[in-house]
Length: 234
Ligand code: ATP
Image (cartoon, rainbow, N blue to C red; front, side, top):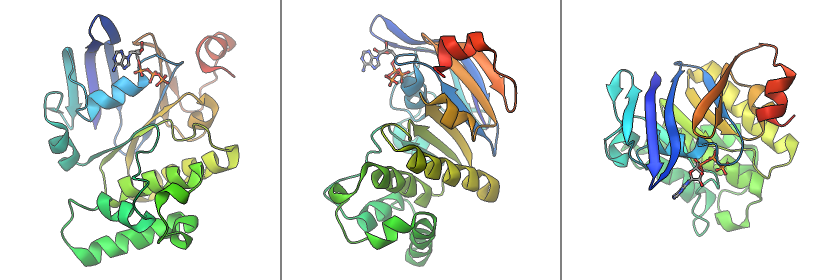
């Protein structure tokens, strides 16, 4: 579904991605791991059109989307949940979820989808009329993911959903990603510094280091100590 070919993204003289190639298979969860500054966030931003590749290709179902405007990429079914979640704290939970459905015109379908999100994340149903500013970090992350899911994406890009969350809450988020993959066939690219958490759901992982792919890990593959110590931090 998503293929990056020799992708180079630079901020001035800093090459944040220096020739990255990877494939995220349809209906799978691909984890992108690596230390601070490895280029993980930049990779997601390049896919969703927030930064322009200097060279290389971003192929979505074979079509190069690397130079399309971000709104058009959203319309093609790519949803991006940024690191902080990006919910609008002045709006209520329900209003944030409705924003996720802006592209969808039919009201009844939108209501149904929002109700499905409340089934996935019961704390959001309880707090639907509250402004997002009153939510805990975990609830905000649920709301950010819920808002992205309301748009019924084909490809979901998630940036560090477990950052700053209690392990139990992070596990809930991962469980929802797993369910969306299994039941809806959703394709996910999951950026995480928490390698253990990401590997618990990923079908395949790519480890970035200084803008390059340092290793790839297949599901269930034994991870040697060198890789673990050098890049994964556990
Ligand atoms: P983190 O976990 O800290 O977000 P990351 O793996 O997501 O790290 P990126 O944020 O993609 O890494 O950053 C990759 C490199 O690009 C780093 O050297 C970073 O300092 C640099 N960089 C990122 N954004 C910018 C920017 N807007 N301007 C200049 N340099 C940037």
